[in-house]
Image (cartoon, rainbow, N blue to C red; front, side, top):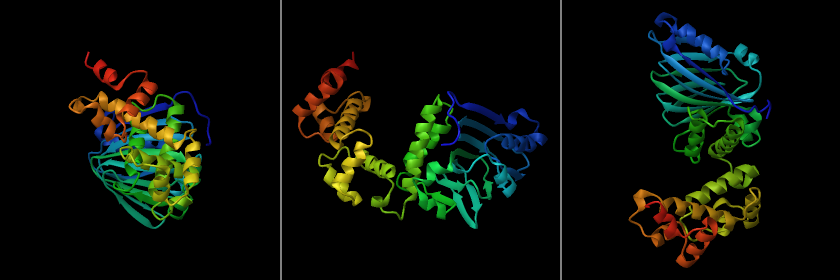
Length: 321
């Protein structure tokens, strides 16, 4: 990644509330021009209001923006003045946005995600009351994971697409007021986001052809969704993705884990949380264990105590005392 990682991100906040009504749009134009976007304004509603919070972390940039309706353009001049090549990722949290780039047009509704190539001009129209989470990441973070996106500079990931929900969670976390406090944590989340966007956009790419990091993310997501299944095995995972069992084990080795150890630890973590969940007070310990894929209560008690240095019953009762 280009750009040094500093200790803490730089945060800037702009709001038209501090400007006179007839000066609000010109203030917004100046704010956008000084932020991370390198874009130009075209027109806005008569009573324009907007608020923008940006965070910079080395070569990464994150923003949360809400506004009344307006139009903007990223011209060739804006592109040429940008310091580096990048992808811009928009999450529509409220309202609607229409993007045009390279002859294509997409409409974003709530929970949809757009990816725009940073070295190409585009136009955008924002609806009244829109709220957006935005990430700006160096192009190589996306391209080496999802080279197929180079064929589609403007890409829409619909709200219901596989892995889209996880990508949304990461974008929201990266742009929230209580965002990660340091650059290292932001960088890890951005790396994970890049993996998830690669997976969500790989609608016509076989999992067996994915880059290893993306394969691993897909495997982990599938395993998390099936923790409750006591018959979840490397063989089943391999069959689901059309890869070899050896490849499954090699992917888990990338995180210095065996398949069995990863599965056991995540099932135990899920049971540990469930035992302290007030909504699950009516379920007995065996029900919770079986619900998370354990089929032997004696074994569950043994591995729970080995992991957490307490029994399941002691852990649950300690929350009541």
